[in-house]
Structure formats: C-alpha cells, structure tokens
Length: 321
Length: 201
Image (cartoon, rainbow over all chains, first blue to last red; front, side):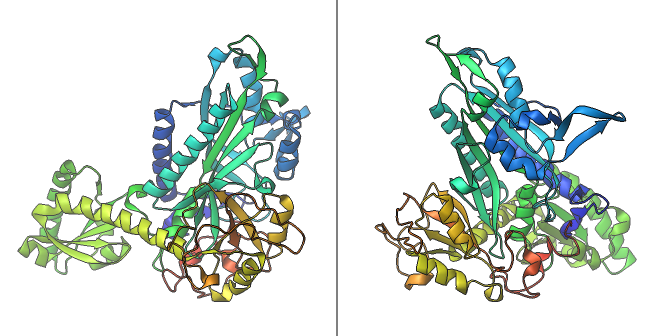
C-alpha cells in the first residue's frame, strides 16, 4: 500500500486496517469537513451501531436496496435475540425513529445533525479505501419544514463536498443528479460528486440525498405547521467516507508512489541534512536542529517535522522522504 | 511529503537551501533567509499545479456524444489496451431502461451534471466529432434502438468501463494489463492502490 497508509485486515473479510499515515490524512479531511458543517449550523451527535431489523422494513425501497449488504446480530450475551439487530449500513431509520420523538412543531425545525461513525456493508468485491465492508464516514441527517428548504440543504452540502474535494484534495469533481436507477434507496433524488482517477476510472466521491417525506412517513415524523396543521417533515441525508482517501491516492500518485497535495499532507515539509563526512554531519545537525523551530514560528501553513536522528543517513534520507 | 528541504555542506557554505517538490521533482535553490516565504509559496504552487493537472486530465478525457451510435463507438474505442476510461457526455432520458441500455456497453451512468461546463464552446475535445466546439442545440439526439427517444434536459454523464469483462467496473484496476498506460503520467505502477496483492478480498 502506498505511503504505508493501510493494509488489508485479512483475518476479517473485506476489512482494512488504516495505519497512522492513512489515519492522519483522514483526520485532516475530517477537520476540513467538520469545520464547514459547524459553520453551516450543523451539530454532531451519535446514534447506536445496532438497529432493530424491523426498522429497515419500514421504508420499502430502503430495505430492498440494503438487504443484500446487511450484517445481522442474532445472538447476544449467549442468547438468541427476539429481534435481530442489523449493524448500521447507514442510519436514516434509527435517526428517523428519534426524529419522531424530538420533532413536534415547526419551532423544532430545521434540525441539522451529523454523526462521525463506522458502517458495515457486506461487499463481495472489496478494494482498499474504495470499497471495504466496514468503513468510516460522516452521515448528515436533517429535517425541514418545506421541500424547498430541504433541497437548499442538499445542494449546500453538495457544494461543501465539492469545495473540500477541489480546494483541499485538489481533486476536481462534477456535481450532478443521480439517475433514478442509481439513486439512494428511499430517496426522492440523489446528488453526487464524481471524480476521474488518473487511469480514467470514475469515482463517486460523495452523495447528498433529498429524501422527500419518505422517511418522515415511514417513521411518522410529524410536526405542527405554523398554520396549526400536521405535516410530515422533509428530510435530507448526505455522506462522504474514507473512500475519499482512495480518490486522493488515485488522483495524484505517480510511479514513485504516493503524492499528497500539501493541504492534506500531515507532514508538509521535511528538512534533510546531506553529508558525507562526520564533521559535515555535525555541522548539518547543528544548523538543522537550530533552524526548524525558528522557521516554523514564522510559517503559517507549514509544519516541520524533525525525523528521528537514527533514520537520517546522508542522501538516502532525502530519497525516503 | 510534498516538499523536501535539503541542506548539505555546499548549502551551508553558500547560505542557500534546496527545495525539492515531490510531484515534479524540481529543485529550487533559495537563500536560507527567504525560506519562510518560499516554502509556503512552493506548497501553494504544488497544490494548484496538482489541481490543474487533474482538471486538465478530466477535460482531456471527457467527450461529447450526440447519438447512441457515437456513445457506442466511443466505448468500443475505449478499451483497457488503449488506456482506460472516459467520461462521455450525452443526452439521456432518466429512465432505468436507459441505464440498462448503457450497461450493455459496459458503461455506468454517473450523474446528470448541474453545470454543463464540458459542453461549452471550445472546452471539450469532441473526439467523436473532430474536435469542434460542441455548441448548444443538440436536442433530440440520443436515439435508440429500443425506443427511448425522449430527451431529458441536461446531460447524463456516463462512465466508460475499460474492463469489458467485468460488471462491477469502477474498482477493477488490476484487471488492466501491467504497464498499461495511463495518460498522466505515461507509465508506471501508479495503479497499485487496489492491486491484487494489496486488495482486500
């Protein structure tokens, strides 16, 4: 794996280990996204990993779409469960359930939530970062009083995703609407950003769904309108995942390996001393150890990391970095 | 690491330092005193260059098709041997039957772009049509052996599958022949991400 970012778990089918180098990139992407979510008034929260199986059946298209990929817990604490739990493939259903408890009036809207979580979708063909059975992502879930407002939210998030992809990850994307055949199971309309990898392959890098009132109806999320009527809420959901890291690698890497755009690089620059003789080494070290901190203080975007002494041996060190 | 700063005995003597960019491999000798300004500038430039290169690649590999025949001919031309996929812009009705039709060409419909930036004058290399500007009025074109003649407003954005033997196309990088070319850069092992050894299976 390039840049020692991850490796296949092997002992767990279809899963991967994200190693420190890969996780550091994920943390940067997370930060970029999360700051933008917060700036647009979203709040983070967390819902359970396990979802009662019956919940998935409440929205017909949804269960049809996700059934083939579900992992189900049937035994817990040594006993067979009366009702199995599915491990979340996505959380529209369980969040719909809680929305119905929390939303009563137009004053409760809009409700703008996001969760950072892992999900499981049992995939037959898996590929590192691009498609693994378990992956990390964020899923936003919002409820609105009108369809217009929901669509506005869906497009706002699509723009936000495109901005992070293009400005931070240097990965140009095409924003668009999914066809009916390809839309999210249970959505009215799905929007996506699509990127092209260096080899010409397409990558769906993020999706934002206009759920209409489908989940509102399935989970009975009703609210009292300003006029005193009861109506179902209009919902959205949207997500990007660790697949973005796959897109990043396949967008920029070359035959020497990983190339990271500076803004997503955990280490943006290194200082490598080059020397042949011991005495030169000593001088380089002196200069090197004296310099970085002084420089770092004056830089706004660059952070300097000093590699461990033992790992720096002449010009070979430069190659490694 | 995007930028490596190399400091050797010669640099110590001259008061310079070498900035080496990871993407282009270019080296820039700058006075140590200016490093505080030059390093951030080099990082910014690299960020921009990577984006522009990727954008150019996207443009170069996006073509416009005016009929289902063109779609088919573009697709038959885009094989693994010839180097990977393309985005094809074509008018398409939003109907699952149309998606299915394109799957026969081993393509998947990606999305219907909100902004049609690839159909503007001079922006697109229309490989199927000799490279002229794609121009506005292309109504009523995507036509049809199985009768879907109605055109949805907007463009469908179709991904051509370079690996005709496999249905689940997007990730099958390792099915491309070794040393197969990717346009940028022209050769190499960059496709190791989902390689057979490293792929999770």
